Amino acid sequence: ETGVTQTPRHLVMGMTNKKSLKCEQHLGHNAMYWYKQSAKKPLELMFVYNFKEQTENNSVPSRFSPECPNSSHLFLHLHTLQPEDSALYLCASSQVSGLTSGGATGELFFGEGSRLTVL
Amino acid sequence: DQQVKQNSPSLSVQEGRISILNCDYTNSMFDYFLWYKKYPAEGPTFLISISSIKDKNEDGRFTVFLNKSAKHLSLHIVPSQPGDSAVYFCAAIALNSGNTPLVFGKGTRLSVIA
Image 1 (cartoon, rainbow over the protein chains, first blue to last red):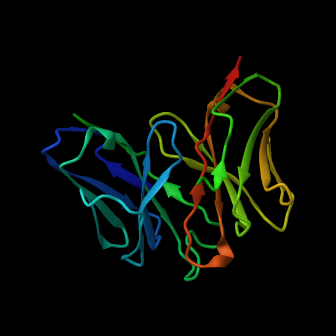
Image 2: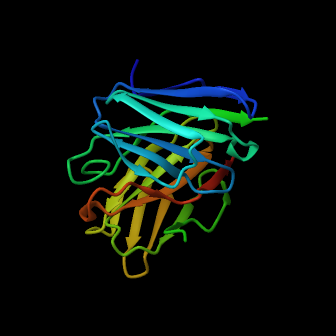
């Protein structure tokens, strides 16, 4: 497999469920990201992991819990979500040059997304 | 406060004509700008970029123009093709300001009509 792969592609869950989204990148990058895309809103950065260390958490509610066991894998654990959390969750990766996020070009490589519906 | 703004949520263009997608930004520290294209049920893919030291970058049918004084950039697609129909996201980054991630606009949905 190549690029950035996300599973599952679609997920429906109740508010009391616990589920996880998985992301895997095969590009040899050292930074991974979770973005949320809601209708009529910009892509919202949720979490950033550089060199497996979390460097950014944009005031994301604690019902979203990221995990980055290594530079190739990223999880988003979901617990007691709300219907307004229904969105497309996108994983991305990039090569960090040490000083800048996204490397010299700022380019992110995205997965296809996981469409989450919370009932 | 949105740092990257795409004020047109949608745009329709006839096949063969020029598509012009606009993007404005507010943060003067941004020094690199990118356009991403997104089809339904897929993640965004990188399309073209421009550094703040340039005012134009061209790649085939796609050209990005940057007006730093106006804090404005635009993506031109000519000639437009039906396969160009997608959502286009403008993004910006302050590469020389440390470990900052990309900031995205809301996107513009382009429909190219055959």
